[in-house]
Image 1 (cartoon, rainbow, N blue to C red):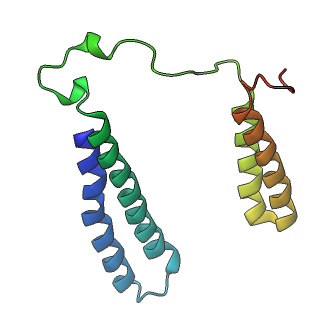
Image 2: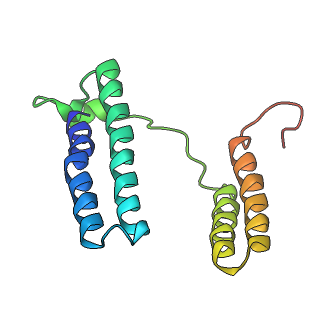
Length: 133
């Protein structure tokens, strides 16, 4: 994770000066551009910080070592549900919610409701409690 860490942490040294130059060039009147670039710099800090601490805890992966072999990384990576419909509900709710920002806040409320239903359904898809399906 060393390369990913320095890639994201290096984004700070690019996006922060670009945000400052953008703000100066627009006389700090166009707020969306420079604020988005500052937020992008902040997100690079968060992801880089997470990867830095994760790489210290996990240690070098096979792709980080020069003597790493392909077969060392074989096996199950995670649990994926190819038959799940919940991502579709979640994406539809998010799309309706973002459309509500342009169309009207009453549409936004519908999108937020559908997004919450999709998120809860996706999180509890493998629940085996009292209400399992």
